[in-house]
Image (cartoon, rainbow, N blue to C red; front, side, top):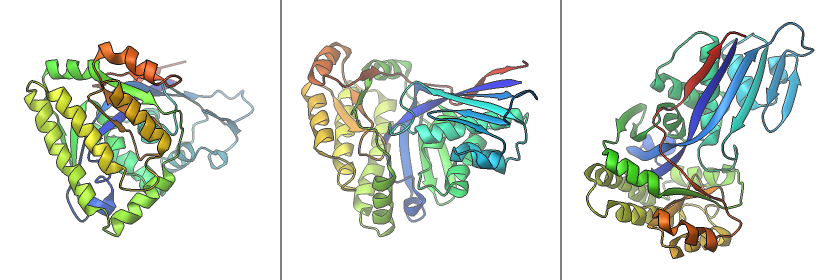
Length: 333
């Protein structure tokens, strides 16, 4: 048997930082964001009895292992152990964008996609919320990682959603935007690669410490307030909404820069200035900070000016994904 899953990465618009238990166990948290048309693909093939290994795992490294315990990839190893998968497997991973250090939630998208494959191997069909919660548990409980709880939800659900967090409760509210608003958003969204692949560990650790010590409650409260404003803006779709949304993105980036010394640097500040100088409605760095991609909202006719102002930096138009993580191939071999 062979299975392939397809799982989108995401861009978080507003509320990032309030999706950590260190915050929403004290105050209500919320985020609004969307999954995009850039994906992580994972294939799992049951091996025959003729290979000289029991597990082959191909990602940025290539592993050949005799037992699950020997697998170096932490998500693959711990998920297979936790779910009691004893099948001999060939597992391969490919992605549309850099799989690490992007700020697009790729690590959680991988976990969601791999769990989707594991469930398929077991003949199970989880709901989207079951899949997202399983990924949250895998990252926070099995792997003991300092992650929030929005990326897994975006990857599992797809679309544009508001997710609210209040202690142990999660509420999912799809944004009721018109098709005209969605198409205008699709035409305006681009990713700008900073040229810096970063691991968010230091930025996240610093931010979580500051959150736990209540030193950034006001800033996180300001980011939380932008969530409701964004949903209202998208659902009303009044004239000039895109320009207003861009200004809110830039506002959120300026707030986020104050959360930790590891969020921005001179290179990132210069890229932000180049984006705004090209006439973008607004921009913000995706993820915890330090590198990866900027999300910018810009009229398509200004893209040549943006590319000219940022030579050597990839500028990638993106669109909304509406499906979320799915098994796209299931076949006998």
